[in-house]
Image (cartoon, rainbow, N blue to C red; front, side, top):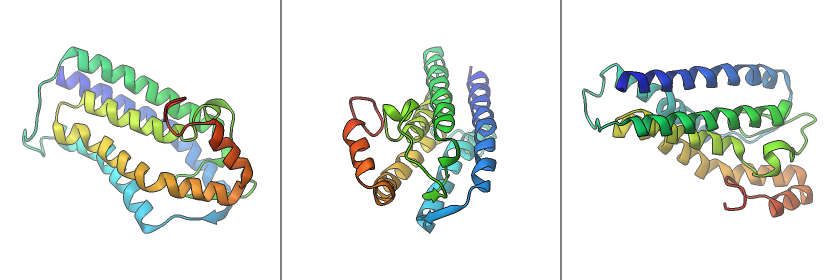
Length: 193
């Protein structure tokens, strides 16, 4: 069961990479008009990479030596797979809806427009929501308290630091149009938060 859940997690990681790569290539071709990234942003993105990719691999390779392992069940694996499927759908949909407006860091591109259709019609930060789902899926699939929850902790840290800065950048760029958008959408969960 542990091997299966790790393989399922690894498939999710590979699928994420396959979806992210084309968006990164497109983003490199777009000129940046406003760059608000900081060393803290880069550090938090690195922390996410460590938590969402390195820690489960380190755990499976035995680098944690069994430290903080926990019991595992088929119900957790099923819940992890379902959460992972929603994560991948939302992640893909977010990228598709953003098109050339996407950036891994806090940047506004030349010709950037405010995206309010697709999943963005329901929540302002579906990409962050997808990453939180990834962290939850990992916690369900990886039966280790450290490696399982490392991704979720890292994504929460990234969200808590960047969300307000990202919204300030969007408000600076789009003004009243962004304020109106904020008034009709929630941050992460439609109609709730």
